[in-house]
Image (cartoon, rainbow, N blue to C red; front, top):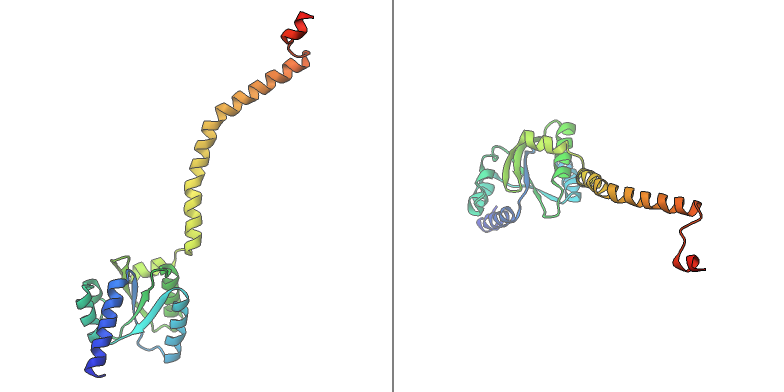
Length: 186
């Protein structure tokens, strides 16, 4: 690789590191080109780009971008899954975890989640979470359940008052109804 090309790759990586809040680092050693391309396709569906770059270039880019937490994860052959802003970190972690289980050679090292460094166990635990839509539904359910109870508590006295008034109206109708002023003057 020529010096110009190396500088271009470092600049691209540094830009990507500055703009990416979430990434996952893995050791791809032992994966075939076909397996890497299949994994790239899966990750792309979930909003992540899988790049294999030399560690020396990645180190330079990380230092240039101020991504010091990434430096600790660069040991041996490294591939990085960069999540786009609309990417799903849970789905990406699941795809990488599944690839690690299936191939038995891909090794997840850790990553950065919303700017915070996470380890291998954190990525695997992230992979066990339900999909984002299910998490949102669970959150809405958890919030709306107690709110519905509170609304029920506040409306119960009003509902009871309406029931008492309705019962009194029925009782008066059964007794012949209340006499109005015009009826009593006749």
